[in-house]
Image (cartoon, rainbow, N blue to C red):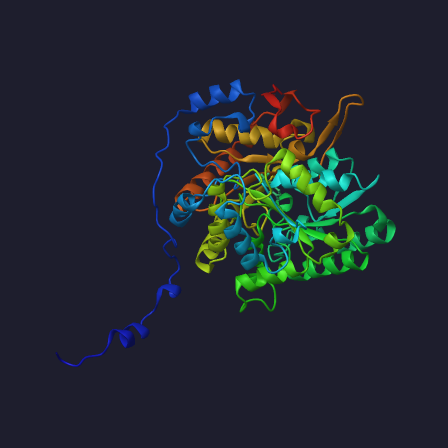
Length: 501
Ligand SMILES: Cc1ncc(COP(=O)(O)O)c(C=O)c1O
């Protein structure tokens, strides 16, 4: 054979895949589901029959993209499907429990996984995130009166669980959130100035402080390491434990690596450990960055302020868990699902997965923005948020007309895409006795992007559909609430009808 130039040196002299503008996905389809075909008339009829509440609309009839939530909607990997077979469903101490505890330690660092042998429980499994919140806030609510739990942004179920236990859920959104500054990457931060003031005035009323990473209520925006550190220092100086609502911890770490000074060269795994070194525990729904379809947990750090300050609470939490969920070693999750969480917690930190995931959401945000739609920029990690007030600006739609509800109903009826109102209706309230309505600071429709489920073409079709509605926004009527305006968590239950103007 003639001696030639080896392929390595030829290839070195040519451009590589990283020089290309577009790349293939870091995965391929393992199995697919054909959608049911469905006409606009069929969808409209069914939607009318459920009072325009998109939560009650049959998923099978969502013939476009289902962007109602990124929670529990992940397409699992082949490793996760395989792991289901490796799980056992023993009533006590199933195999998955030990595999998961090992993975918790590997992912979040020392102190969070349970050593049941010590007899001091500090890691609690629940069937989903809100069950963990229920157990935590039921226990905390018994500690006193007039208590307040500050956060950079409580999620709706977190807020509801806090309020159900007689405490106030206080959101200290970053002042950057409303600013038109696409270069501001950490709009999910805690407003530390307001947090400091609150601590000076009423530290004794605060049993714990919370940081939601990423901040789902604030446009899915991330929280910087600096803000985590500062919030932790302030809370700890006042002897208050800081907990994460950690549902999207990996996505948050990606933003720190890519946009915060000093982190570009660090491994995502190390950034996650650094984030968790600042807190005393975390509540989590594994239906997001656990890449699983079910599961949640509460993990309190051994030696952290929470465990030291409230040493009676872990037992109360465990009793709650046993009476409502099951034995601590499965906590309402089947042994099989526990295995999928353990695998998911490892996969979610892989650069190729995370990079693709967030860039897909960012590109979707850019295409909405490029079409002139008023979306929060830069996009967060899990969803694109459309500003309802800006969308309807100049049309005469008032806050009590709930334009976000009209928008989600018509998007589903006309184009088959399902999105979620997270604004004046979801987070507002109505007092029947006084007729007083309250409205939150933010008014969004959220387009959540399920993990590993849709392709670019799908998301483009949503952007174009929303743009078409935007062009016809003058024709979109307001809604009236025909049932449930005064209920807690009303967006899940209420019924609406379009109102003639
Ligand atoms: C930030 C945040 N916290 C808590 C939860 C509650 O988790 P789950 O739906 O598993 O009850 C969610 C769910 O979407 C969430 O986004």
